[in-house]
Image (cartoon, rainbow, N blue to C red; front, top):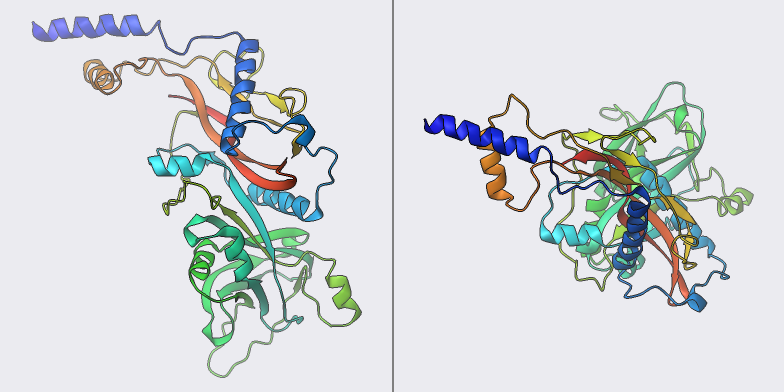
Length: 386
């Protein structure tokens, strides 16, 4: 008898909640307006600005320094190579660290050995990096990047990256280079190495790029690099002057601002996990959960002139109906009871929310200077029912 009453109760509850949801359908124009205003507040908050700069302090007539443009373009290149960020459960400290804008810095190689046959030595001014980044735990990501300008490889060449120079160098990682890498960037994650260097006292540290060799005993590696890295030259003289105009290998860093309260040593990791994800872009006829396109023009939509690059971006948003969260195969009573116990104020019907997000690098003008920072989770790439 009790079981029968319980089943009747479940049927009644399921029938009732299936027609209601806290995710109410809204007018599209109203949703767009709310999304634009939310982005306005979000950007100011991520940049830790109490208010937007005054119009006469926007610096819109100031020329962007070449170094800032180079850093901005390098950041965009790095983001193209990275996977889309998928939202996961984070700790409170990690959420704060992930939320605020990250400071981007670019540090060019200071010297090289101007040869093709010997290991490529790349030295960096750690004192400069330490001054710009601060304590090691503020560094969230670091990449060693180099550009392949020429390649004449028969099949492939395996290169190995070492931390340190000469006999004291330690192996870090390796990768294969082919002719397909010509006119492209290659990168290595050196976050842990740079964190270690920042904790030390050395003013200068370096990496070595070596060709893999299966040499044994007294055998000496004879093979040469069959590709050329921008910034490395075969001979001195006139070519050295030309090399000064070429982009040398550099380290691109992402770090928490030194005056930030979010200076936790906890690192945020982004791991993919299974979910009810949709990458579908909405059409006029789409009613189910999908990504709706929304372009934000900083000047037209927000009235801002102080963000100099980009001029706008596709923020997008999620909207649409979600199928009912339970089906005939579920144990209704157990699931409903457990769900309502842990979420007493929540809707039993899922909502269409962002699932995968991408960051947005910007050049902005504040305090009479240009800055490059990366704003996390600004571009909606896919949605899910949750």
